[in-house]
Image 1 (tube, rainbow, N blue to C red):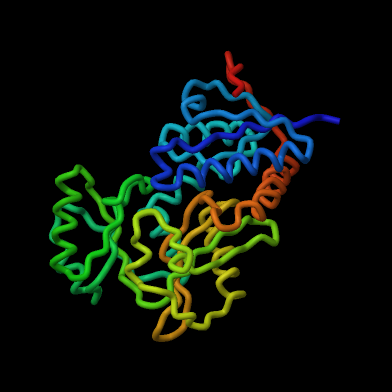
Image 2 (tube, rainbow, N blue to C red; image 1 turned 30 degrees about the horizontal axis):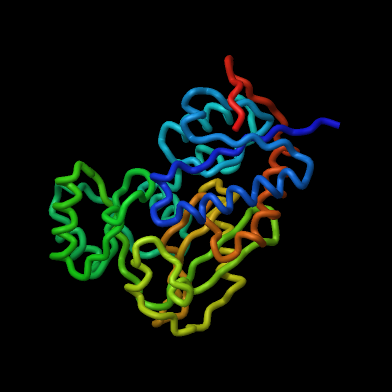
Length: 300
């Protein structure tokens, strides 16, 4: 019986702001769950991908550096199963994600994609958006300034100036929604789905979850949330995912405000890891393959 060699790619700490230990924990637990199922797991850093030092039958990992994403895409193009897909990770950049979720008619705040060189106020007025969230459109969040709450159109103008001065050319603007903030985690193709109120557990990166205030327990349809998240994951091509939504205090509807490739699963990682391992093993069965670039020999 073939023993599958699975490469695990750790997330570079730059892409784990305030969550380095949590990201490392879910990576470690996933590797342990795969080994418990008889797989050989070789652990790598993102830099090993760039050096073409990865050899495996399949890859799982939390890579987010653009160079790593391109490496994963090349592996997939060669027939190797990769969880999450490099193409799916790329779709989780703010701009492509906003476009895809909107085009799929998934419940989502009114959103704009604007040049930071322009005055955003006319576009905000036309869209009837006042308070909003301004997010750099390129790539993933790495610092507190990449996502900013703006309480007014004038405040949004100031955020645009700062982003433009920092070399960020494009911003995604999401209408601010009032209501309960709910965070969720899921694993496609399995029964695993977990949702909770982050303000109750003080779970967050930059304290931005406090903008909506403590959860009030607004009633919502949990099954509908799960279905919506599964649809969004399918649209983006994600297998291991998480994100945030708002339960509206006006109509009770749930709207997605963020969707991420392989988050930390911090409050539920012990429960999630076996399901993530099952998802990875399932990908091997669906798309058998192997990848061994010349000179690949690094094993951690």
